[in-house]
Length: 117
Image 1: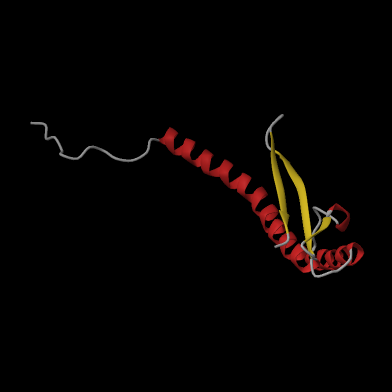
Image 2: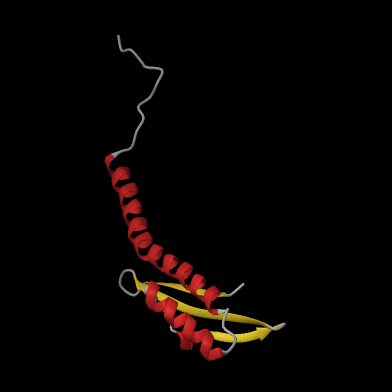
């Protein structure tokens, strides 16, 4: 007599395990490239908020350059900053792109922008 179980087999087949593993690996590789740029973006925001304490454009750029050399910011320079005044407050804004080659002709482009509060 063949006994039947109430519970069927559960789990992943070998091919589905390879597929899930591949997806996790690809996601990990992309995350390993994106996370440092997000950290650098946060550092740039911090430097821009310090730089807004300057009263003139050269002073703002000098404060940013000092912070950029300390924090090793390489994506933008002080020349890339837009310095304006709104209601007698200095507003510093920036925008830049980072591009990563994925596979063949595929690229991942990240666009960052921000301004001082």
